[in-house]
Structure formats: structure tokens, C-alpha cells
Image (cartoon, rainbow, N blue to C red; front, top):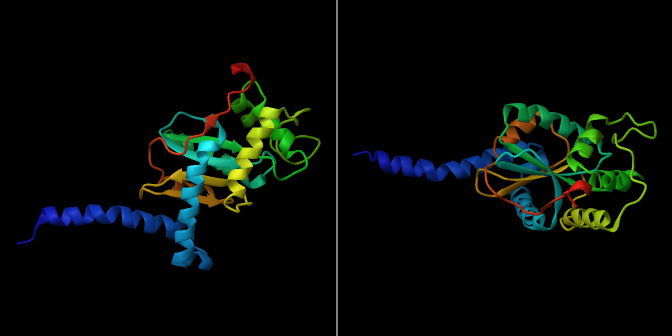
Length: 222
């Protein structure tokens, strides 16, 4: 006799496996990423990043239970395009919470713009100003916040520590996006994705407290 309970049990055990396979196949669709060893190594890097997030400082954007960490530079055009897409996506998925991790690594004023966000009375508002006014400053075509005149010691420490997390994994392309996936393991990718791709990717974010780190409180909360 066919055992329906046994059949359902096997199906349940297979769900995490197939979720992992589908997620990996969707993201790593270029030929080089089709290699199993490479995909497996990327999950190792994701786990290392998730562990190191305990030392990160970030700007909280939203209160949803599905947490996504994003390393960004204020002058990064790819980060800006991802930002625009994520704002659209969250209209349909309010359970997403973004934790933006600032870096200063691209342009000559990336560090001072990142510091301007960190040192602002309201870092989230300053971050939004940078993104919504992207490309509108007279000085350059990067982020739309005036650079800070000085980078205080605390801001420099935050930026150095955030950057060291990526350098520890030999990652130099941004944005870098990290989250806990629904196959039970951390997942990451770097670089720009289309809004449609991001919707597919973020559908695999699982709810829960993962990563850690410290929120950047800004001047008004000190």
C-alpha cells in the first residue's frame, strides 16, 4: 500500500534542497557559475560574510522581519540602481528590511560623502537624500549629498570596519547583498541586477534575526 505520510515526509525533506538549487541556478546563470564547486564556494563566502556582519555598522531602513544587508558606496551607480529597484519592490513586500552598510571606496569624495551620511542627525534621511538626488550635485555625477568637511574618528572607524569585511573575502565589486535564504543557509551576490531579477532573488529571504551588527544612530541620538 502506498504510504501518503511517507511520501509527504520525503517531499518536505526535498524542499530545502530544491530551494537551494533553484536559487543558485537563478543567480549564477553565466557559464562559469554553472560549476558546482564555484556555487558551493559562494555559499561559503556568504556564510563568512554573515558571520562578519556582527562587526558591521548599518543604517536601518524599514522594520520588516526579512532582513537584507547591502554594502554600498554613496557614489556607486550600481548601488543606486539597486536602491531604486528595492524601493519599488518593498511597496509589494513590506516585510523586507534593508540594512545599508556604508563604504568609502570608489570616488575621491566617497569617504566624505559616506561620513556625511553617518554624521547626519538622521542617517536614514541623509542616505535617502544621497540616493534621491543622485547625480544632481554640481561637483560630480555621484551621490547627491554634499561631502562632510571632516570625517570624525568614529565615522572613520565605522567605514574601515565595514570595508574590512569585504576585503576579508576578497570582494571589491559593489553592491554586495547578503541575506539568510529559505534553504537554511546565507546567500550573497554582488553587482547590479534588474528589478525583475531582484524580485526573484528576494523572494528567497527568510524572516528572522540574522547577521547582527550595530545601527548607526546619528548625531541626534548621541
